[in-house]
Length: 394
Image (cartoon, rainbow, N blue to C red; front, top):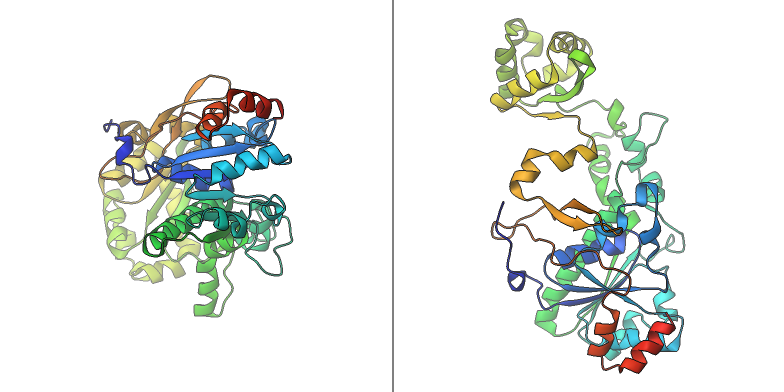
């Protein structure tokens, strides 16, 4: 396992981020900045972020998206809570939020107000839509997937289907973090902060831009992925021996030759109808059933072994929980020890990047509710009596 990085060596060590966020999109922005070294202070309402209590598909939201953060509880509906928030923001480099449009302005925490308090502050807002005709709508990841073409492309014809992860929430938060990074670079030149905005709908449009450009280039609308005309001849999930499934691909003429030679398919290699990739795409209606019949004689493990040995693309069909035991993730330190809210230990994926050969690691476990509140308030000059009074107010 790679050595643990030195926290002070992380790129955003010394950067303070104050976030007023919940669910996935906003917390993802803080997760990225926190993993890269920033001190991220999560301001929670009385009772805490609702994701602490979610069940089902949301049960993992809080521990995943709130590592490397500190927690303080402030009631922003009270003058004392807002005053404490303003004192905290006065010490911040970045303020992140994903409230409904207009909420920060009502609280007196909008960028125009904050920049008067701290001209160097960078505000990042995570919304459903960038300013425009739709910005009054309530957006969810699923909403923008439906209206932004992604559900259409993911499902079968007539059966739109959302992607199997919170792709827009997560990527929207990532683009918020990228915007913060750009604003930090700009601040080095100007000495002033700025407002950054990221949005679910525009993120989704960026995701389906390849299909928009396919229409622009060909004049033909993109078909949903399960019904598309593939650009590659062999690029499919095959059901093989014992009912197992495996994804196999041969996406170039060179890979086709290697594939045929590896399995002894001399007849296919010599067939003039299958000479080039485009020829094979046109022949898929009869070629793929033939390959399915031949490959079904092998187990998924046998096929994977041949494909790996010959440098051909392949993939087992893996369920998310099986990734805890993935040998590559285990060998590379891609999973870090994490404490769940009930105290149980598990492991969590780190950011999918290395810095100087090292993965940014966990420095702080997901915080308990208001775990760091008293210490942060004391740092801001509050007396023990003030801290007790604020705690009593939530």
